[in-house]
Length: 273
Image (tube, rainbow, N blue to C red; front, side):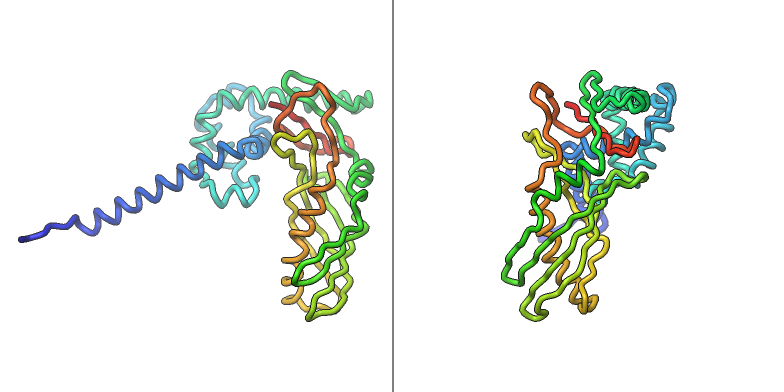
């Protein structure tokens, strides 16, 4: 009996198509779960555009493509640029009111800054400012902090925070004391940045998602420093999760961070539903 098999080309095309569909579904699901983070980047790029331009598919798509490069690496690894554009087009009607609200909030905030108003309320938005001094006072409460692991002991101390004009991430420098079986006690410092996170179901904001930019340990080579970074990073995450930098007042209903920006020397945060 002669068995006929589908052409190899057809089989490869079908397999490739199935893989592409699975990747798109995964990306769409990821966007559903992380939309508040993505929305903030989109709003920053879309705000300067007029309502008429935002309703133009071509102009809107080009703006979303530009916003793609501003997304965290963790998002871009899962979501292709084209998937984000299609998803944003589908979400446009729900997204535009957020653009209007954040635009009004920021315009109002410029006026409020001169009047020393600490909090601004808009429909579905609750906004407040966090000064560098306030953040410093909150974070340093939990330090020094020591962590013991089978691979060694790590102590983090003397956190020094700063707010940069051109970034919504918070810069932190800390002293590090590391003790590992093969290294002995070593002293150094770590520089990192973190962003404000608002865990689901919580009424408190934290500094999370730390990214180490510089790790210097006296007398330790680059290769061994990379080994110590694997000890430092989870310790940083654990320590920062214990330090709420802001608690939402009673009576305020908010679920996600809608906007973060720097104005008047403060990190301005807008929360919403």
